[in-house]
Image 1 (cartoon, rainbow, N blue to C red):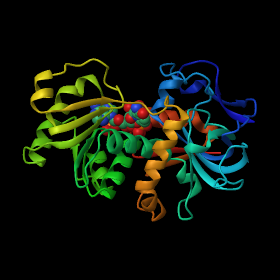
Image 2: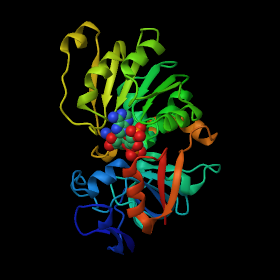
Image 3: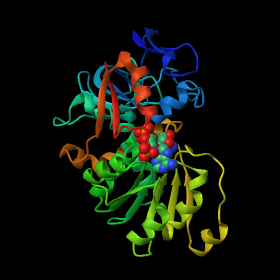
Image 4: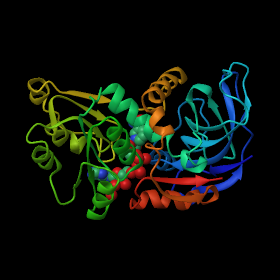
Length: 326
Ligand SMILES: NC(=O)c1ccc[n+]([C@@H]2O[C@H](COP(=O)([O-])OP(=O)(O)OC[C@H]3O[C@@H](n4cnc5c(N)ncnc54)[C@H](OP(=O)(O)O)[C@@H]3O)[C@@H](O)[C@H]2O)c1
């Protein structure tokens, strides 16, 4: 089959359309004819050589896809059938005509959700669900601060938090992106280039702070993130875009009973991912069916133009997901 391959790490120009062996499903897997995949920040990091795939995983990029089931292993439950329209969380391999996914990482695409658009749902929605709702126990009606409001993660956070009756505060790097985040349902959007976000959060929450911060910036944000939390609040670090090292005020941690959590989704075993998918569908499945949760799409490009899609992500002007259609 055809896929996007790379001859080695480097700039987007290393991505090219090439030939790879057809993937074969194991007993617990389905084989999906890929309709679309999506570009995630992790793909950019992997392309640059900073984020190798977990052992045993395809070195073709792509952490999610949508498409149609064309083959199933002997141990795949009867609920998944050949011909089903599905979207799947992948450990890799999505930038291809076909991909293998464990049945526990596969979700049905409801009638009302366009199959191409569905490709942008699994990675960001499951990441937000795992980190904000499962690990940080986001309370109904609570407050979340998420950095990069215009990112795939940011736009998914707004939808899930709104569904939970909560308030979603975001940061973004321009007034234009802040305005777009407000249109998409952010409670408030803070331009981190012109304002100190911890001070704005204090004002916006009348000195209380938020229940949860979802952070992808890392070290430099450790202190203002903790300052943004309410007593008993949880900081979840899912990225280190700004650097890995920071200074942790242990005094604040214990006096204000804060918790700091770190997490990645990709390297988790199939059983853990299946439990995350089940929990997500139980909680948010009805909202997906009803169309209240659906990926915000910045643009759709042909899969062959993956290099251009990576340039779009690296330029950072996008809001929502950049999709690749096969
Ligand atoms: N641990 C996990 O399991 C996991 C899973 C998925 C994603 N992630 C992480 O989550 C992050 C978002 O992923 P994505 O694919 O949704 O990314 P994305 O769509 O590429 O967006 C990333 C955005 O972060 C913003 N940003 C950069 N520096 C910032 C700063 N100092 N303060 C606030 N925002 C800043 C940029 O927008 P501005 O113009 O606003 O600066 C950029 O557009 C990445 O770091 C990714 O690695 C982690």
